[in-house]
Length: 440
Image (cartoon, rainbow, N blue to C red; front, side, top):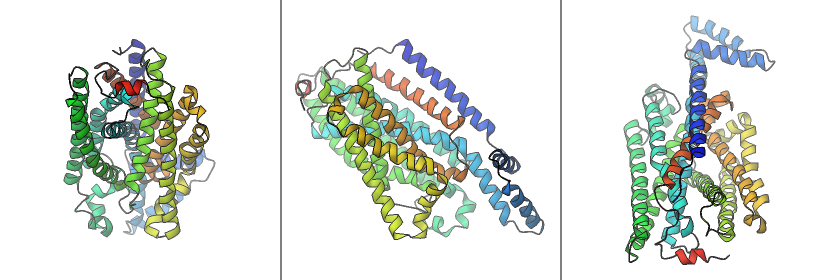
């Protein structure tokens, strides 16, 4: 039985506290009025050594406003909303990133159960521990969405009745994009995922003391049904929680794209957590062959992610339809470093590090690739959310770092606490012996 050490507790709590301070600073430094927003933008221009064209533009705006032209005032409000959105968006990026790791792990776990895989039962409790974050992490995401619906921020512009009234495209989507239905769908997704996690975990632990394979069979049937539910709800979740931040744009590949980012991040965390537990004396029966398979999945899904990224980008670029290309133009013009850095960290580096079969058996190589992959897919989520939420007013600073620290600390504490609630070895699984003797 795994024991939550004081070092892990202290480390995770320290991250949570430091993260909260960073988040508080983000809200404290965010503008509360349009005038404050204009001062922030003006000072940023001066800090960069450029003349503040925004100040000149604003002075022109005042002249227009005096003559009854309110068009430029809407521009000021837009910049104000972008700056005010930044701490919210920073929290949302980190909240979704760590939540999707837990959800992706749940899907990978269900795949192993439904496939009745023989290599992975020694890793089941690691996966179950990571999915312990699913419900609390999902509730936090729902709370952020609720705050958005209550107009504490303007990340989802379709939630603003004034915007909808003057926007035909969004208005035509209001049958689907409306607040009550949006929140109800979110509750439905999380309830379904959490129910599967609860029942599957229950059957898994019960199988340890069972005299037959009845609980294993129940888990097999449940997992097969859950995967059908997951494939539909994961796509809808990605449309709702990410794609609707930019409601004029859509991609039929987006659900798969988010899934690819989710699953590779999840498998990476499974591998890193397994290596850590082995390093402190647990999971003694897990061998290099298991690590090789996890690294192989990391490699394969990194290539799969790159394939989906290219498919989405290439088709939109080639078609050159204005409503579609604006999504990438924004990112290519204002987010060059995270946009291209993401490609290097999510595809090129994992490809080069893990293509060699021998490297997949070296823990330090897996850890190196894993850290790169996790940073890269955080940047992927950053690129999916920030351009539409904050536009060109982005920066990776204290609010973003504080959010990552807070949610990483919370994730570590919950996952390791979950690991203490059941033996780390699924001793009753009928494929346990096969997993122990697994050789690639």
